[in-house]
Amino acid sequence: MVKQLIRCTTLLLLWAATTPAAQVVIVPVTGTIEKGLAAFVVRVMDEADRNKVDAVVLEIDTPGGALDAALTIRDALLYSEVKTIAFINPRAISAGALISLATDHIVMAEGGTIGAATAVDMQGNKASEKVISYFRNEMKATAEKTGRRPELAEAMVDEDVVIEDLAPEGKLLTLTTEEALEEGLAEFKIVAETSSEKMAEVLAHFDLEKASLLREKVNWAEQAVRWLTFPAVASLLMTLGFLGLIFEIQSPGWGIGGTLALVCLGLFFGSHLIAQLADWTEILLFVLGVTLVLADVFFVMGFGLLAIPGVLMILTSLFLSLMGRTELWTWDAVGVAARPLMLSIIMTTVLGYLLLRRLPESRVWSKVVLDAEETGYTASPAHESLLGKTGTAYTDLRPGGTAVFEGQRLSVTTEGDYIVKETSVTVIEVEGSRIVVRQSADA
Image (cartoon, rainbow, N blue to C red; front, side, top):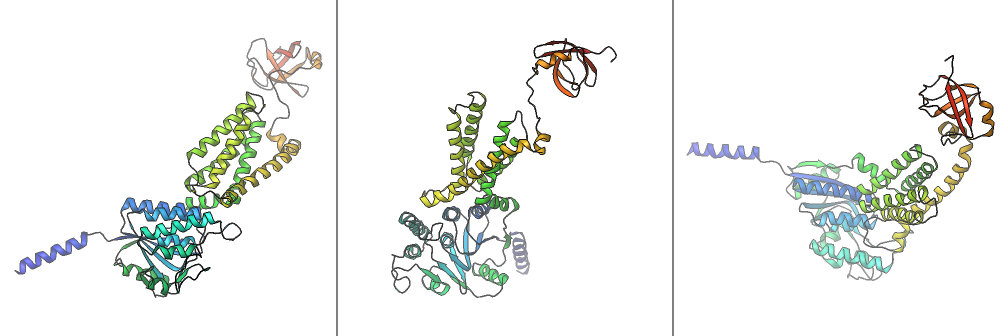
């Protein structure tokens, strides 16, 4: 009997030692809800589903933000197979309320608030009835999916929804921690003081106090994406990209302009692609537009037959990238997307005019670009006087190339011989624009 007891105890100890601890991922959702933050949360939830973690805790403290970003986060939470917990510490206002409702469990810090989720425009005024109706139904559907009272969610968006003793007519619903507990919206109140103690209390409530914790942070790439998708930065990238394309078309071969355009437009589309604001459709549309413009310039000779639709494709691709993956097209949303694009067009027009007018006269331009365009031969009646003159091959003559006579560079050709550069040559024939040289006898 004693031996059996010892054996069972040993097996239990071995089982406890080999059983992996629960895994919990902690995600900060703080500050303004924007598209870069949405990309971060989507990435974390994808990894959590793939690694089959036990729970994801979102520590929420936000005054709200962009509707499309909030909807992206909402979908990532609502359709995840991982247990999700919203720890409101201390507020989840507007878009933050939608995100909280999309989780499986809500706990709130003492003195917290949740609600006031009506949509507003760029000036902070109440959005159109279309937007309000759309967001109201999104909140209602989210609450229904997570088993919460849908009328509470609706009252947070629409002041016409009346809830006795909580939301009188004409007032949006905002619940305190105590009210959220009474209405069954929140499950538990956190009363600890310090941040670490609060999180420990959250985990203990869900029997996860012994869990292995992974605190997720925005990585450098996501931080860069959040910065690059900022409207002012996006305008600057588009402007530099446009200017690079203009100067690349103005000069033969591949140069600084093409490199600048490739880098800036690559950063623009790459950041919007990572943030899920654009997809390959916009990129392909942009490439096709640029191709049509180049074909018009170099083959159709600028009649606009291809350039006009090409420019329209370029502008459309940029606008759609700025618009994002939103399902709700309103004048306000269109204005938000069009503003950085219009700013970029104005900046490109002004800077392009000034640079094309002033830059060729500057010393910097003369060091980067050749002053004269050489097309193979230089025609000039004065070249008749060069007959019998001696100069130096400036480049290898294969048989054509460049030679220097009395400090002047001229396009020349040999009788078919190969002459290496810096060899003394003599003009033996001048026929129109054709200058024929031969290696000098004393070379």
